[in-house]
Length: 188
Ligand SMILES: [Zn+2]
Image (cartoon, rainbow, N blue to C red; front, side):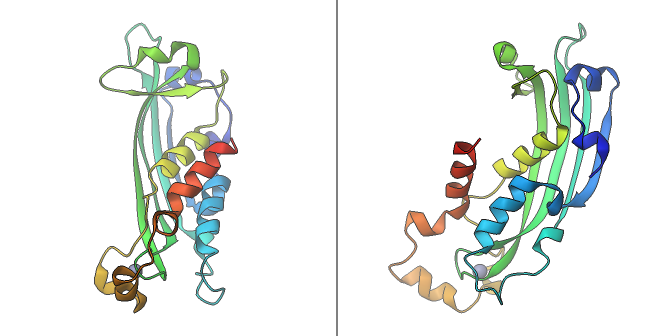
């Protein structure tokens, strides 16, 4: 992974330097997000599991600056994108889904987090320094859909019709990412 994304730094240093980080990599660079995808794909038969799921393309751009002229409010704008493998909840076969997260945050310690403006949300920092990679990863985890599925019904496998008309499909089985995201939060 690009060093600028992985290195710990303070938001003030990044904002003062007007640092721009461009990242082109793969899901394999992000452990927690990989863990979520792995758990989701674990419900597939081994033969059906896409072998190269860790190689899913992931890109991000982060631009750091100050949101105010007094330079008290370090901010980051940009995006994170990934195309990941998931289990379609209509047909229970593998599908590809696009994750897209817009990033527009003030980077502030918890005790200053009330400084939110109309233009920015606040990203609360637990320490003075942080890893930009963690921000990218968290934004993509938040962008996971509650339920993944093929973009087009026509791409679904034969089970799709049966699942929709049957008794299956309770909240526990059709919202795997919702449950996984909750689990990840609990283990923080
Ligand atoms: Zn499907």
